[in-house]
Length: 221
Length: 286
Image (cartoon, rainbow over all chains, first blue to last red):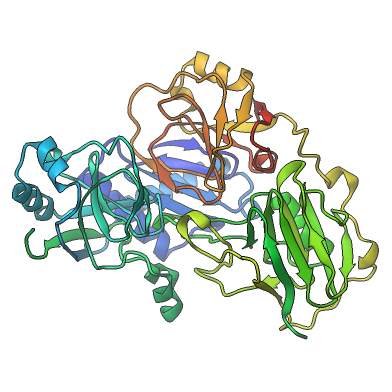
C-alpha cells in the first residue's frame, strides 16, 4: 500500500488504484474498523474513493512517520476483515430538476430514460465532503456522465439531486453549486438537531461513508 | 453574576465566536472551523488564565464596536485594527466602556477574550462559526455576548500587568517566508512548476475568506493527468487547472480533486491567514 506524508501530523494511504467494488469494500472495512477501535492519538480520519487520511494529535504522536508500518499493518488487517453488512438507504426523489432536459440532451436520452437509468443503480457512498452531509455517490452509469455547468448557480436549494461529471449527489444545504440539477428529495441530509436529541454527532448525517443509496422516483414529470 | 458581558454596537466586517472547532467529523464533510490565527487566539485566552481553546471572539478587519455591560477583564490580540485600547495585554473594562476597532492597518483577524471565556450553545460539539456551511451564529448590531459564569472564576495573581512577550506580539505587515511541506502530489509536478512555486513571489487575492485564500502571480504549470478526489488538510496548497494556488483553510472542503503541491506548516499558517489582500508572500520548503 502506497503512502505519503501529508505535512508533519498526517499520513495519507492509497489502498486502491481505481474506484469500484474493491475500493468501496475497503472504504467500508477501514471506516468500520477505525470507528469501532479508535487509534491512539488519531484526531480525525477521512476515508475517500481510493485513499484514507490519518491525522494525529502532535502531543500524543509527534512524528507519525515513525508509525507508518504500524498504521499500514492496521489498515491491511482492517481490509482483510469482513466489512459490515451493507446498509442501503432509500431516498425518494421528485425528478423535476431544471437541468433534466440538459442532461437528456447531452446524453441523447429521453427524460424518462435519464430518470429510469439514474434510479436503477444502487449507489455507493465513497466519501462525504464539500459540505456537511454531502455524499459523493458512485458509480454513475457512464452514459449519464454530464459536465458541470460552465457557470455555477449562486444558490442550489438543499435536497437538490444533481449530476456533476461522473458523480451524482444530493445537496445537504443551500449552497452555490455547479452540478446539473435533475430532481429533489424531501429527506434531510444534514440536521444537527438530530445529533442534539440523540447525543451522537453521527446522527446529524443521513448518509455515512460506506452506505449504499437507492433513489425512488416519486410520480412522473 | 449576570452572564451578559458585551453588547455588539457594530459587528464591523465580521464578529464570530471560535473555539477549538469541530473535531472528528471530517469524514462527514464537516470542516473543523476554529480561529484563523490560533497563535493570537491562544495568547488572548492564556493571558487571562482561560483554557487556550475557550470560546473567543474573532473580529474581521475593522469596524467592530463592543460595549462592556459590566466590569470585566479582557485581552485583545491579533490584527492591528487601530483599537482604542492596547493589544497583547490584560485590561480591565468598566461597565459602558466601548472597544472600537476603527481602521485595519495590519493583519486581518483580531481576537477578544474575556475572563472565563464566552459561552454559546454548541452545535456538533463546538460554538465555532463557519459562515459557508451556516454553522454557529453571526452577531449583529444589538447582539449580546455571554461569558461563562457557571464556574466561580478567580483571576490569576498579578493578572493586571500581564502582557504577551514582545517576540509573541506579531507584526503581520512583515511576515517571514512561510514554511511548507511537500504535498501529496509534490512529485507529480514538474521541476519547473515546483521551482516556480517556491521562487515566484505571490500576492494574496481579495477573493480570500475562511474557506480558502487565493494567491495571485504568474501561473505555474498544472499537474498532468487526473487525480481521484482525496482528503484535503487545512493549509493545503492546491493548484487548479488555471495554475493559480488556492490554500484550503478552516472552513474549506474536506475532500477535493485539485492536486496539492504543498502544505503550509501548521505553525506558520497564521502568517498566511493574517496576510491582507495585496500583501506579498514567499514560501520555502521545511
